[in-house]
Length: 329
Image (tube, rainbow, N blue to C red; front, side):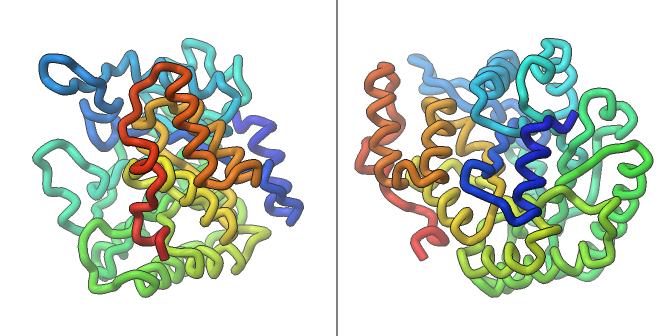
């Protein structure tokens, strides 16, 4: 169930034959594993200001973005993948399905919760044997906290997961979050720590169990370049999107990371909370392939919103601002 389109892109990237057209884009629609009811995103309501979209709308949005032909991977929860498979979405498109295979405590983001204030603890809701009929690619996440016991526990669970995934015939990609709380490392020092922990984690893993690619936070171009250039024939580096930010943030993040060696973008809220997700991804590809600058693409995006009679969340001037400090650097 790893589509030929994705397989060919990964092969070209690892062979050193990458061109920007090979850049892999994944839509991360697994927010229900973290946020619960707010996961599908808000929609305007005349009475209360906004309400949250329903799960049915969330699933319809997944179908729309997959059917656009603009993404390579659709990441979702196992329960969503089951419904989408019943709708034959993955047999009627060339999108590769993937599911989140674990849900560590640092992604538990229920309203009113405080779990992200503590070091990540490993946990997995899903059963690999139950998921295997739905897809054979999944995400496994680890967060390093510079805490000996917490990190040792996480690494032990990742070790056991790799063995079970091999037995189940399941491929995976590895997500490495920055810790959600202060671990006394800032900026590039934090990026260096994350890079070193990734390489330490994978140095003892042979190809049969290795992740297909990484998903990690962008900690600046130097840190991204250091990691991406270390072992490019075996380690494909990808970025996660994080908070929604401005449309300029979205385009800048993808472009700056790609220039530093990233070959995958897995964006959740940046796509899901956009006024026009399909148009956003279409322009994202243009930016990556050097058809438009990030600034020009924001203008094009707002022209599309106006032509489609879609109310923008921000003015063009506001939306063309870079607000993420890492991207400003």
